[in-house]
Image (cartoon, rainbow, N blue to C red; front, side, top):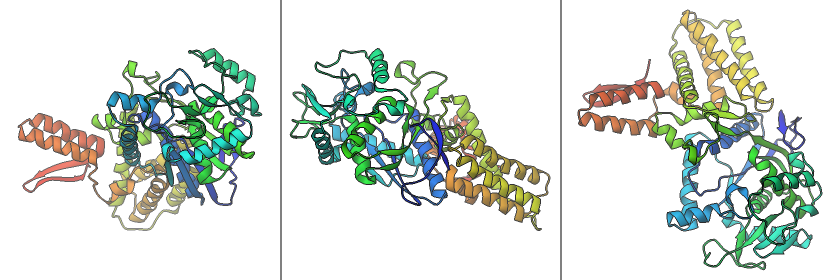
Length: 483
């Protein structure tokens, strides 16, 4: 298996530290607001990575953090508000209330996207004791210095700081200096220095802790080092995150982790590309920030969005448009329709060995493409080729039940192991998802108001988006697969 390692900028053969065991860490969300669809891109790609590893026979231990304290807007260390505290103030809630609510919303979105939950999920606020121990190690090794607002890491003390970016220490400092928009705090030694323990301000009483460094709370970067090393050991196989984490967050993780332990922190660094919307960066000012619920409210299945994401390579920039999502929805419905038709083939007879071998070869190629740096676009070509040759054979009325079973088994295996598009549920019967249930309630409300035109539009949307036909009977509405 080949993976593109950001550290070195090349594909490398994946060799785990322990045979058939993989320790994998992904940077989790900062739970101050609903996750938008760009946030969810990372978690979909790393879900595919985990599934590929599991299919390859590896036991994967997956750890993720939840940032509920210490993260500043724009990832800045100074001159920027804390995301959690800003949200709590604007919503008139405690930090804990904000964290619990948005953590639950994130988990619900992940479930709707069929993302396998991590084995271990830890909130930064629950790891303060361990974080302070890690800070103590950095202090004892001479990496910290004190400013008026807390304890800072001196990046000039760490050899090869910035290696993940491909720049040297001086070049990285110069680059970040050029982009600095606020004045540096008095006494800051380097623009790349970062806070590991921030002193609380007067009036800040929520999510603050007493320590030898004063009453305060951890900086953002330190939590990922403490959580990952506590639950996976000092030396990790894989660390994942968005490309935006490379110059600051992940670079700082490497510095503080290796400074504290004297060991290599991570073997393979994987980063996914940005997502734009209609070719532009997502921003509230442009009105193009969408949540998964926004897509659902527009009649789209979460799994259509999952399909759209994995149809692009994880390292590529993904441009989201509703036209592209419409296309993904149509493609997904075609996949469902072909699988359902295969399950309905009743023609007796043996299996053509040429057809069966073609299905086997395409299935093998699917996994080979994934083993080449998660090549999902190329892998999907093989998956769709199985669908195409099956559809052609059914259209010519040449498909036997044995051949249909071979093709369907291949599609179900691929979907069950990697794609996670709920293909087996569509073959086995109609599944009433929460999204369809909501539409059914709205249709019933419109029928009661005698708005039959509106009710028919919902019927059509359920058929087109979810492949479900509604049949009105004396006993009520019945659901069946659309033909």
